[in-house]
Image (cartoon, rainbow, N blue to C red; front, side, top):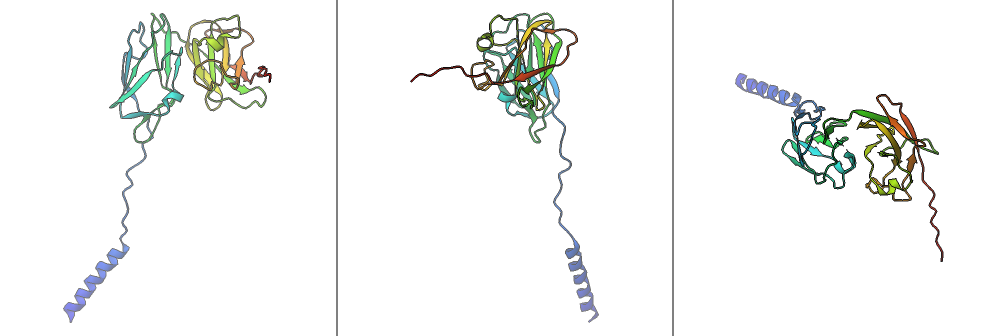
Length: 249
């Protein structure tokens, strides 16, 4: 009788223990919020007398490209887009264009490079090189708003040209410097050579850096912009030009 009572007591303790125990799934640790870091690049970022047609950028972890076509801005613009490929922890870029002599090029990736698992971006990563003996280092910044509503213009191109005599130039020729506004309508054009420029803004509907559609908002500077060591931010006003085409039945 005592032995049976002992067995029931042990069984009761086991059932009580199992009833109180809770199975909790492992949390997996804290979420990784650190963006990838560049460990090496060939040619080195900031290279002068650049003559390569291939760029390799290495990272400390596996990365992917997210919306590269929308995010990447090359200044000056290239006639042919860069060919990109992810290989392990490296990004390879192939240049098809013949690059201009004595020119500083800026590859601004925006937020296109993210890590594989958590999509943490390298915000505003730039790769810069010059085909000449030195890197141009001046910059121009500002803001773009709609001329009527005064709301900010995001994803709006700001482009610099040499002095031109006719307004048709932005419709036919690529700019020599370009940047895109952020969510707050702000922009910064980096690595600019000292000098005077025509400033044109464009809400580019077909991604060709040309003002060639009547539904594209545009803005023009009233006078030449002088890029010097210190420059005040420029405020631009975007508007739609009236379509003056006439149709006769």
